Image (cartoon, rainbow, N blue to C red):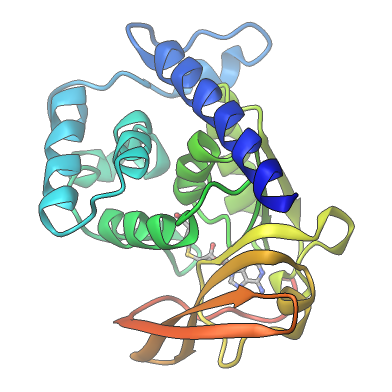
Length: 257
Ligand code: SAH
């Protein structure tokens, strides 16, 4: 039953993905109702931010071992330069993390691709992301899932991310200013949960909000010593796998004052 549900979710996601890609081609994103946001972002890009630069980045990520074609397509569809400050635009298509203010970073594209590919080993209809940050990972997930729910504790980051979703005409993302340690109980259970900041231990609320058959990907640990963990919820409990070492900013309790 659940498998059928996720399959049909996937088909919808694919259609949406194609539509999004079309909407991004060949215009500057002048969208009725969101003109302010649209004119602030050049969705098409030029030079270091052009579609060609984006394609090179996707090739680089693929060469590093990502073979999930839908994930590579999603990466190609999202203009990363609009998720960083204009002053860093020329670095947006290098495979590296970049600062986004408030002591936070936009993740390295290879890390985004790895986590997305692991999370979406099968299509998943509803996904909770903890740590919206720039919104880049959110936008990648939005290409592949029916609905993405994303929670962020730093209000200015969240507002800026929302502006980017509007400019890109991404309509299948719901966001909330909140503490990701609590998840988003009203919207769960989720077929997938992706945590993009590192807790010392996986928050209990997130286990509770993972659907049976669902998968959670979370970097666990402190300082430089984190490991990427993957939990699959079965009818009887949770199966855990430990993947590569990763480096994320810490998951911090409570809202930013
Ligand atoms: N996915 C983001 C990664 C941003 S870095 C991107 O692609 O840009 C991690 C983010 O997690 C930061 O924005 C940070 O503010 C946020 N964060 C940290 N602790 C949090 C918490 N308890 N709840 C929600 N967000 C949190």
